[in-house]
Length: 250
Image (cartoon, rainbow, N blue to C red; front, side, top):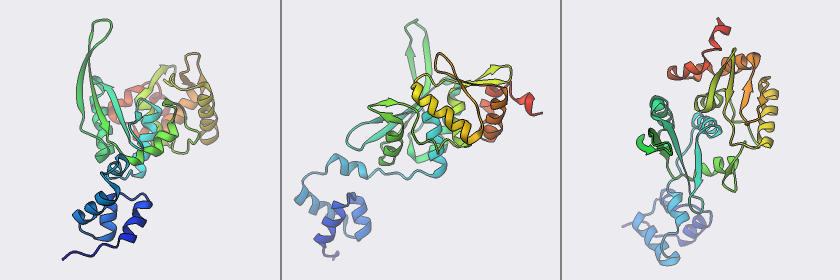
């Protein structure tokens, strides 16, 4: 015979926004008994309760990778009340990189899938992508990067570590020639880019120039600092993006 339900405890845990699954784990009660009690007293499970079942823990390294890729091509969407997911799209030429990120993010995301589309010029484009699964813990990143669905440079840039910067560069960076690099940051506001400029200078002594098209440009000295900080995290298939920087370090 199962444990007798302590309904006061059940209500207390419910009011603390615990999911049904968490309540079962905490109390050790029979799953059917707990679900039956809440169905009788609360009605059908609400969306927020369903979603609480998918609160996948994000490790420190994954947090840095998420931050770096959200500075780049990554995106998040708010689906329903406290329901957050994302999608990472890449050209088929970057399949290895796409698979690498998916491996690092592990259970946070789906398997890599493939898509074909036809552009306005009539050309066929092949791409690869994966989905960040609905996860309550993505709320932290959504609130950090988005304001009314518009993505911008976060107010708090403390997660812009060398590891995060490596993934940011692999997403949107390019060698600019003359031992310099640039990163496409065109979707961010000028205010956000000025905030980024100040943080990079204060934290890493990196100077950037904000160009007219809102890309950011690193001259040789700062490109070398950036490369030194990130080179150990750049996968071999993406080293070509630093082709003008390597000779400086020999």
